[in-house]
Image (cartoon, rainbow, N blue to C red):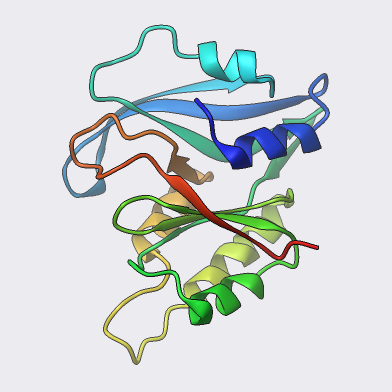
Length: 182
């Protein structure tokens, strides 16, 4: 499981005192999850690669935005975009959300964005609100997947897939750019 964001994020964390959440899940129709197994793992590539020993056919792996640092829970800001093209206008909007480096992945039909920082719960809720406000009610399409934000708020965590083992996905998310560098 190689994902550039995860590799860089692990470098940022204190591996002795931190835990990431990943899940193995089986997607169903219309965004419904048929089953999900959540694992809390120390942020090392060895732990990440071996955390799901019993792989379920058609199941995918998702990274959750929940991170434990000691006894404190923090949240990785991440977004599931609804757009099929990541252009300069969308880059500008995403860049203004948080002034830290971010990773943009093409997931086949849309894009996933991960920011290189951790937020408190109240900051994460405000972040999701800012994401929703990126959607312009005067256009016929959404920039950010509002249903994904709804699921995130309902579950109290966000998750984005990092594999493509189920037939409904076109491809494994691929890094297309790093924004707000330097």
